[in-house]
Length: 489
Image (tube, rainbow, N blue to C red; front, side, top):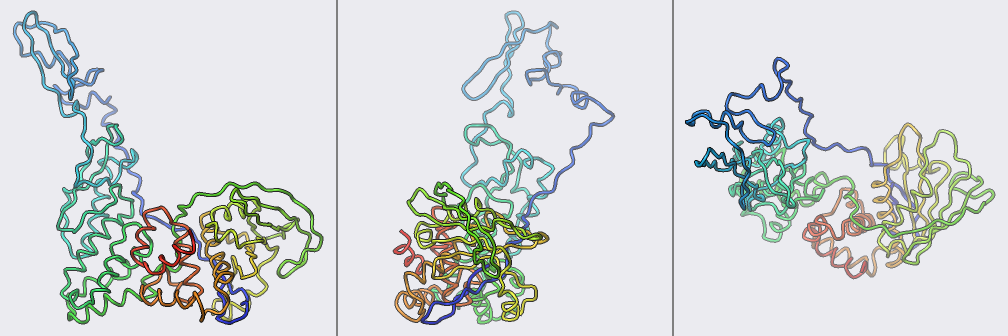
């Protein structure tokens, strides 16, 4: 998937990595079964006497007035006040006025200490309360903190001016600083983040961690919406309960170990693309006879993608695809390029949709000790991105995976074109200094070497800019982001 450049003073050959973009699963509430009416009764027959509803949603007038004397049939009027609906029963010259019920009152927006766990009508139901309670409970208690189930309720709140049923969590200050995220995803990551920071701070060994490392750990564990922070928390969670039995020095050692631990990182940085695509149009195709693809000559079609920022990229595809392979389309290739940072798109001249798998896969299978190794995408200093087909039994990455991979690959091309091929000189030295100061990397793959660190960091920077994860990554690796601020303007 990724090209791994050699640390030499001459242009390096493309070294790919295996396809890591399989489907991912997320915690989603199970579908609840609706309770069936008892004895085939109509809804109003299931209600106790005195609570039957008329067509306007109010208690039945006859029931409401049956104790009044003399008995008479009341005339019902509606009266609107500023905050409630009232029903007035007029009995001759006498008037009985009923205060509006809770259901009549306009709901208020969520309180300052309330977080929305779900306002989705499919899940904001009593049937899902226990599911949400269990999810939140698991996160909070995993960091040694207490949880009370009544902090989560189903209630009506005002959201964007409308009355909405929502499952709401009342934040407990004992869990730490309230998350900045008010609409909590099903992963509960913002709740997990703040609870983790609080739980870690309660460890006696926290005071043994140097101030600079404390700051790094706070940003790593406290990131509410980025994948690196989630991976860091998941790495520590399994051993956290046993830390109290360790000495303060050993606790500090475990905590500091998370900063540089490859296992505490996602294998690849693969944040959702927050960038806005540049519009483009495709021109072509023109025929090319016996094109020299990687591994085989075959007839090809050449297209030209013209982007609104005045960049142009040639896209070459097989005229007749090989049987048994799954290919990306020319349209998909142009779409992926439209999401690149303009600095990366500007250094690409060609996207090659190769006709066969990478002929060097067998070599890399031995090199990486990975049987059945398969290249997905490579790029080099020459400005050509190559995308390889795959067997139909193993589908290619989706649009998100393709776009993310291309940002990484063009990060290689951009760095080699602008900084040169010798990673021991010039801007590469500045980057190495920034790496040493930041002490952590955005993914396990970034830890392979300095070239992969640049490419993975460029991917995070370019794909999340303008989104909440971008701000969190800036706090985690500020020195490298400062360099990219100057390069990717």
